Length: 266
Image (cartoon, rainbow, N blue to C red; front, side, top):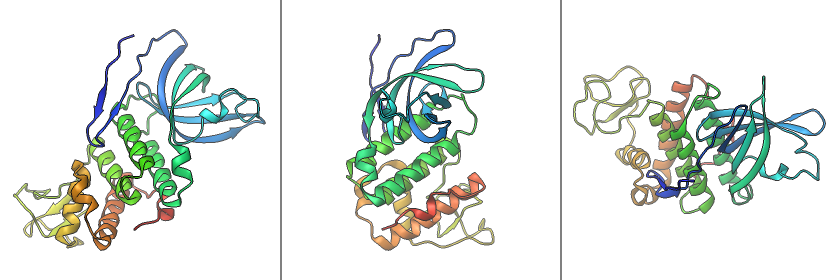
């Protein structure tokens, strides 16, 4: 097995990949559990975001039984190494080993939990097609959950950074300096969600807002991973920035996240 380290640069942490040996009807991958649904009396449908296979829905046989060998490993916020059998309608989890469990450090804190739940929902919404490779989204989610669990930064900042970067990976990077329409060098005083971010006075569409310059600087820092700048910002700028991020996300997803109203903002 070849081993190498891949740097998730935005989060400033390392992600150690797993090599995958494919077989007919059986494959190995690593993934993050996004959500679970009850199936029958003892099974669950597990929705995962995997490194090589994108979003996967697979059945965990008997995982709701108390004697299940890997039921506790297939819970949301868990990073797992999986062996999966490819079925006709739904795949089936054959084996699961925990790589990292972030749930214990996330679910015990309300702000971390609600922020983490919004991150999981975003990851699922950003990968609409099943079995479509989404390696960048996977690495971003692993790094984001690790950062959230470590508690080094305010949960709302981690969430907003994750949302902005998820949009950027999907091709919807917001502009916080140059005009999003004419590319005129900024900074510019206006922001328009539909236009793609900062806009100059000449390009300003109706409905544009004029956020504080510190708010725009905060969002730029979150997008690029400038945590020293982001951590020093004031609460009022964080709240204003969160509103812009939520509006920008909703515009591109065409509807809001179910979990977003529960997120506790600083």
